Length: 125
Image 1 (cartoon, rainbow, N blue to C red):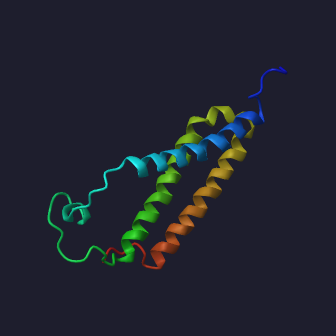
Image 2: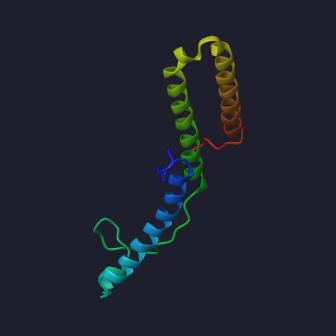
């Protein structure tokens, strides 16, 4: 249609302009409308209603980060397995190829798990 000015790339152009514009307008309005009174209570660190004790910046042990990272990796793996299993009927003639690809994916992740285990990344203490 000749009159449809938002077809194809028009949508992309619209959102490329409207998205950043929305963010800029929201930040400007926030800056103009927020309360400006700063009190001692507002400037303290919030810790679930308790008075803060000690420094706000502490060094957390790196193994917490490693556990979180491994959790995310294997959580994403579980999501891929779910999507793959739900679409198994749609593979048709390429079901064998799809199965081989999934096994390659599993082998890579098991290799990463064994590497992390061997390096001691899974020891809690």
